[in-house]
Image (cartoon, rainbow, N blue to C red; front, top):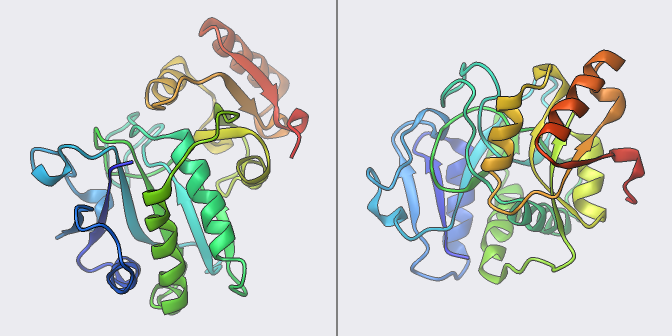
Length: 263
């Protein structure tokens, strides 16, 4: 996989991660691009950055903030299901790879196994930027103490560079997630322990699901999506769940409740 690393000039976690990248040997043809603004508000395009022309995947190295200030290492695809308060465009999401996300999440868990107090988690699809290149964010949260934590930066750097050895399993099943909270505890288990590879996650707080949302999620997953995984109790009331199933069937896709997935 030909990948690039992108970070913001004034982003402390991004700089920490890149400093650790520089200590590790990696292929010189891997672009490392510093942005003047924070990535979520930036124009990340081939037109602006020609070195992205032949790139398959972008990894944005970034800070993460949370209300609880929980130390975390997180991973997610970017995009907006509705408004665009944090960059990008309303109702538009970025392309991503279900297989690359699964691979990175498993590598992140493996690399972070000896790191105390940090939560390793997926997040649902949210915030900018909007780019035409498949991508994801990998982040250190949630305060300046963690953003500058050299060990956390090293773990993220090692995880990103593992893409040099990236291989997807023939058994992985590309899927889209619907329902549940922002930090996606059910999808964490699925991504880590099952054969399902989850790309975009549409959380409960942006429901009701619309046809355009599902279309975006399907079209912006580079693998052919086989199934939609539903956090049943995290999909609203019975009327809302019925509407979700109706939309899924209209697309000709299969669905499964997450409790039916062996994990």
